[in-house]
Amino acid sequence: MGARKKNRAEQIKEAKKQIAFAKLNNCPTSPRKMRKVADMVRGEDVFKALNILQYAPQEASNRLLKLLRSAIANWEAKNEGKQPEDANLFIKEIRVDSARMLKRIQPAPQGRAHRIRKRSNHVTIILDEK
Image 1 (cartoon, rainbow, N blue to C red):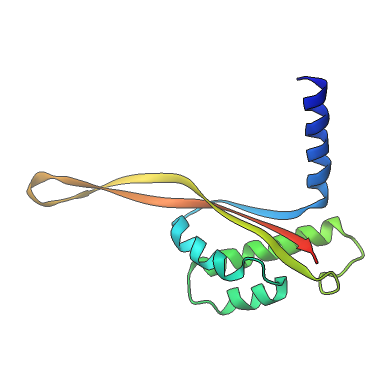
Image 2: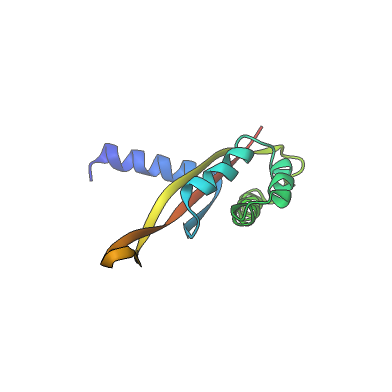
């Protein structure tokens, strides 16, 4: 690795130490359903987002609620002595990416078979202070 590339990699690594984030990999919910819930809380204040997710009827909201609590705990670990209530935390970025797809076969009429794709996703939440 060249010196310039190595220096840039170290800068990125140092910048990531200051960012509070949480990741959920291989969540067995389709990305489309998860994005619907993620769009509800994107850019919101953290505590308002917790309330939204707690009372949302979608099944994906429970998983996002747990992930958001994890991101808040990660922020507290990096900022010892500070309270999240005083920091005005908000959801800077929330990404829902497609993950592995389990392929199954369902019998169909006249000896045919239909393919069923059981989708899953990766979710990343990044928090920031206002």
